[in-house]
Amino acid sequence: SKFVNDTWMIKNGFLNDVQEHKPWWWNIKVQKLNLSAPLILLPEVSCQKAIEILQEKGYDQAPVVAESGLILGMVTLSNTLSSVLAGNAEFSDPVTKVIYDQFSKIGLEDSLGKLSCILENDHFAIVVHEQMQFSGNGSSCMKQTVFGVVTAVDLLTFVSRKDKK
Image (cartoon, rainbow, N blue to C red; front, side, top):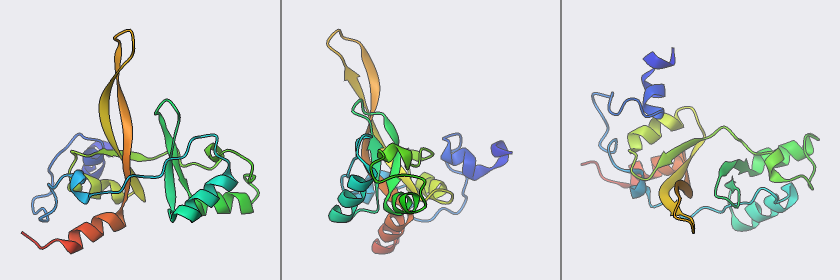
């Protein structure tokens, strides 16, 4: 059951610290990774254009975000290419046809320990920052802004660069 799986509980925010002998980096915040701003694609970008942009800019993946700010998923260069080559998508199709819509989000204030638990099952996590957004009539809502994309390589690079405390 998920409820007796500590990794699932940490990933979904039900447990904080379950590891008795935590590594030195376990409680460091995600914001310390100093991630670069991600490349963002709008949903109407074609598969061909997405491939060109990702290759030109040197990215393997990019979040797909609607104009409203809603995070729709992640497009990867390899999945887009394989989908087109397999005939499951056309170069002219929007990237929404080839996105991964199952993804994990993590906040800047979350710990690297939580990130580590997420990355045990997922190839990446989308780093988000929540902010209050007000409209002209005074109504407000919480809006998530994509702050970055983090992979196991990013975590490993951070951990290997820093001296143990």
